[in-house]
Length: 373
Image (cartoon, rainbow, N blue to C red; front, side, top):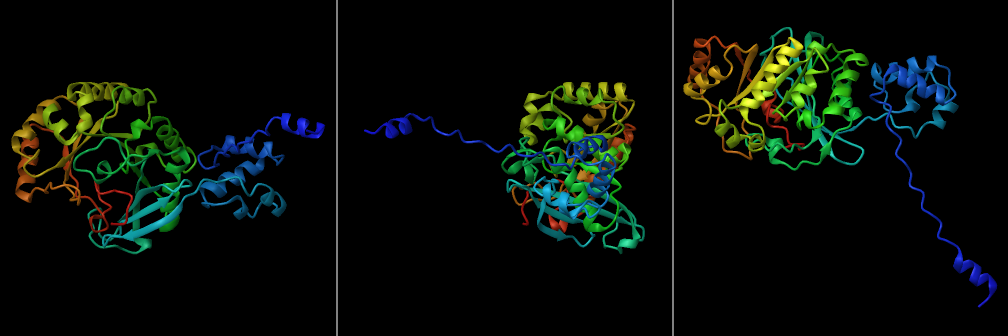
């Protein structure tokens, strides 16, 4: 054996250098973007320009930002802004639009744009012109899939994959805003997933949507099934958002029947945490209650619910069930709904009935499944 062979054989293997993913710029604040451009040896004022192009002009790539020199744009072309790709788009007759967005890892997430037109008002059943658009609400997702497994929900029937990052949540709002050509006015965290299982990214996206996109906190609603300790954690941030708790039943036994994950969280403990939230924030809690024919829609259920909420600074949002292929539940008829409403009124419980938008496009509450079916 030659000396060269011995030397060659004794050389250690060359280590494989793993490429660390570069974090997307979407979701960063003005000060963070200013720090970043200065690190790239650009003047500080470029940070404000970058912020405007990302949040006001919905730039999808740094190469799109024409106020920057071509040379510098080419040098940072690989830095991701963090925008998704439109996988599918469908529109319901009432103007509601469902978007399936493909993320960088190929996963699909669903978001919904819900317009309200001046001509027909909030319960319009026919789409109007863009110039008549008075309000634009976005229903955003916080997870790919959902681990809560609510029996009446299409998302819960699917497979949970992962949490969404901050930029993936914010991107949904920019996508709807760009598509409608109209400023988003309201956001509801009621899409795929449980926001309080992704609490850090949810809270940071709320900050970004408020400070950077410019949507007032009072126009943001966060919906949760309830995760032990997380509502109190949310209250400590003293946000001005609306908290909506998906209750759907007036007692623990029935709640576990339709929300299997509820066995980890007794309804009395959940309501106690909600009362603490009201005391800590001074803001009422909204309780979401999907009416399922013959399951939770009897007057006796309304009376039980009223006793649970007695003396509570709250509002009950009744939602007649939206059908899905994966479950056999039925929507109660008008008379059944009115009987439930009258029982709540007897106990002086603040309430409203919400008929969901986007039924024809499978974009209504409980119908999101990250598919175009």
